[in-house]
Length: 448
Image 1 (cartoon, rainbow, N blue to C red):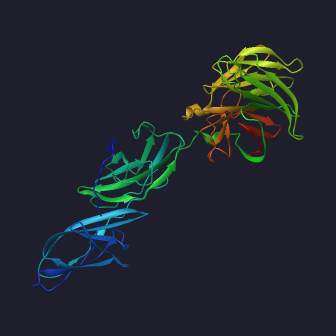
Image 2 (cartoon, one colour):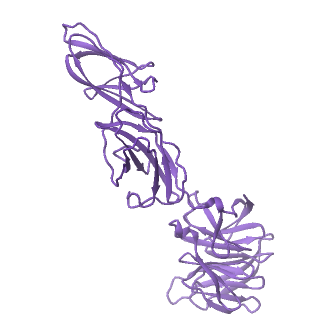
Image 3 (cartoon, helix red, strand yellow):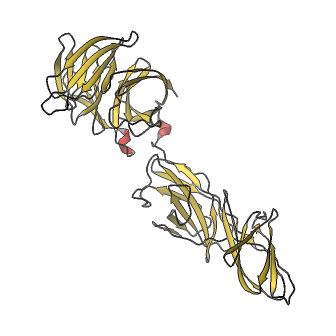
């Protein structure tokens, strides 16, 4: 029978002992001698020995111990063994009279072993452990915690099992309530199982650590990449958009004048990185503009004004076509046929630049795993790359929005704070380019 619980429970430690004793039967003060072993015959070297809840000694290399000068009467003897393989304890009552006391054939229960969790997904996993061999087995208690300091007092009691042969338990999101959250993606958890008899705890297993996966069905991905930083160069601050026209970079910079009646400034720059020279500069300051990415479609630049996107006539240095951009575009990209827009609500829209029709739209994969914070998008044939401020993987989707792969980035774990600015991206041939406010990074791409 299984009983699911959703609260932490404090259990009382326990373990088993083997001892012996002997002294003058008329003195009223005696010795207790013994040898501590596990049920499987292994000696419990180093086990701690307690008398009446007071620590008295530790077992030697062969499990032997001596407690000297113990007054006659009834006493409770306890042994405790704890190491990385688990925890075990046993208690027994002894009656000292008429000489030293020999306690034999008392053994510590062999701790069950928590095995490595399997079938680990973003919101589920399977726990397994070895079966208890204790004759007085009553139940297993499975605990979960967010750190390795896991016992009955710190962990959350997740489940109780009363069948000794039932050693598999499926953990799913919603099975427990702990710290205001359930099993979530890309999260580290610790698990441990304790064995109980009718008097309390007999043993505790080792602690197993597991990190839930960020993505489900990752084994079905077909577009996984490894990117490596190749080079970088400095740019003006507040870089809000970047794209490659086959020869040079187009970059969009945003300048706020700080006043409600003062127009912001958008500066569109064509930059020759090889020569380190600016080839063209177009300034837009006729309104209180905001910037959210650019894209080169092969003949002209498209700029996001957050609420709208507009084409730019380079020759006349003026805006051309204008389309509504939904909730506000964070970044723009060009996939060879259409514009790809990433909006502030983490939605991707594919737009036909000829008439402004929405060809398709889908929600970013990061939403499904609890991450909101998309900052940039890049596109190429049948691949849309999305970067998120909270995670060190770029999600890759096909044109329909199906999640088809990932690419790891190198700067999310280096204390990089991107909350204050976006991370526009683009492809430069077989290179990925990511702009980080005032730095442009160029990465090689390797399919794995």
